[in-house]
Image (cartoon, rainbow, N blue to C red):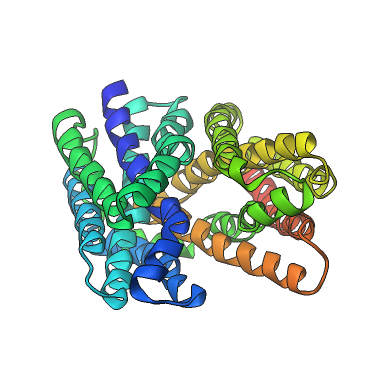
Length: 385
């Protein structure tokens, strides 16, 4: 099982690198194609759109596929999208390639989470899911800085080509190390997958991801301005600052799996309350370089700690629609990305300063708690009946 989980986490690592490293390569891409900053931003938004669209469509379309076969196909498509981006001769084709690369993102994490949980068995499922998602967190510590350096040293095309190679290695690793999970021979029909969307607990959990998780992105999107202009940290230290944030994500990811296995709903509620506190305090802590770094680490920790629990909760409440529900979690998180970035931009543009996104993020997290707490209470009451 550890080797199988490592193979699945490798795919998450590649996905994390291509999602976040593109932000550090935008200037080079814009210079190559003669794009303005907003036009270059389409490279980012196209990937996010691919995630949001691809997760439900692929999951329903492939509902009767064997999960191991589906994982191989998804990582193959991911590799193709990144290699195509590396060789794109125009900005339009680059945007199209990024859209293709984003399509397998949500479905991959959804299916990989289900496979990991089935291999781990009862009582360890959330931790197994957390180990799969660990690849995404480690990417922010190691992969994103490395890909950014490679893109600056050789050209942005080399970074996408390297991610494509990671995708191909993942295909080989899954084919060699990941077995077909127990019970996977029982096919799930598309209508059964779609039935998950009729479950109030599924919709509530997705809403928590869309809204509550947006608080972290409200801070992360504008972190360079906050750390340089408010905390007074030199711009040359930003790679180390972002690596610290990534370490917080790794810590939170592992802690979130343990917490969710012990008590899923209470763990999610407690983590969300902690996130609200951390985001609110960060608006004050950001004025000092030391406290700003501590606060940023905790923002990454609390944000990442939510993800395994949300993933595990969706799998627990979705009935036969587990794959779709688990995949939609990543669509929800990308909606949170867009929502947090937009809310943060609104409060900055209104003149409230670079610490205001943290307070706005605390508000988003509080709204997520307002959705989560009643859903958890209803689930407890139903279980007791």
